[in-house]
Length: 397
Image (tube, rainbow, N blue to C red; front, side, top):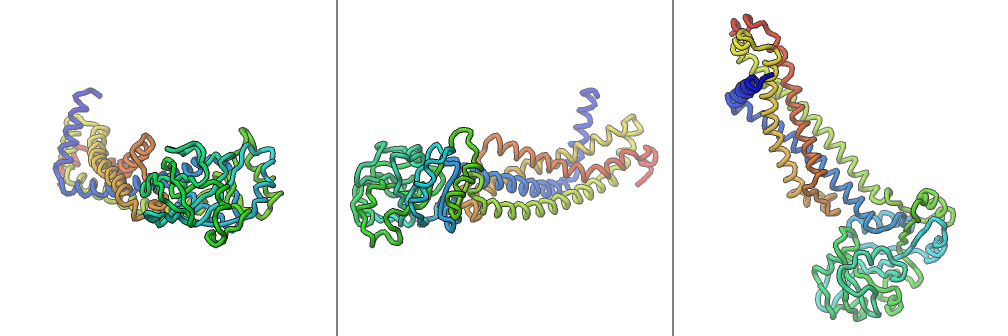
């Protein structure tokens, strides 16, 4: 087809779009709402999934061990920064340390929240950890000495935002010095106050609540390169059949199940919206076809072929749905950004989807889906009109 023909088709299509602005604006609105819903659903799903995966990667562990009854509590601390305390005997750590699949293992003790001499924080998990074998805390240290001395602590990024590096804090009635802070991790570590295991002995039993000396809370395991995670889990279960075991893929299983339910709701809503958009496009282009039969008959009489007529009307549908799709992409991103705090799942995880190649690709897919829905609705009346005999089309009023 020549450039002149393409230009003529585009000019006729644009004139058709602007001829009935209000009617076409309704179709633009329908497509924009469909695309907005689709963009929001896709980005919502991606944001939550990525946040869970990122949180598990940031811990640096392939396997996490906790008391069997505390798996949900551990997930809530890791993913949602909720303050939790749970304990098991240190024998569990000693019993698995020599397994051949394990490259490195370390453990933490979770205690109650921070109390400071100058101010207070509503949420802050106290974490005692083994500095010699640690691979969870030290990689995130932003400011401070590489090792804590007696009476010194690090704080997570959330705690640092409120306290800073101060010298007047107290922990369980003992004076401590905040000497460093961690980078933001978007995990429960951000709400942590990190102390040496050796300093646990300085805390009175009455100040430590249900914790007993010799107990630990959680074990982090890093496997050797190429080691079989399933085999490692099997060996751990043989030694400690009652222990709670979470691999990277297991962490956030509850959140993933919730996400599946939400995705089902989104899918049903999107399917209904797409059906309505198809029907609206079909109705709109049926009305256009009825109004423009004479015009089409004249075009056919002077040499336009069926393909030309279909291109004109489908180009109109593409222009209308393209405008609607672009508006919908903007609305979808805005909804996720400005309404994220109203969704408990997003606000707890801190999941926000920014502009990057992946989100732009999802947005493009949603845009094309909106255009495709509109084209499906416009296709039937357009095909019927294109197949009419020119003389019949001219005669019909």
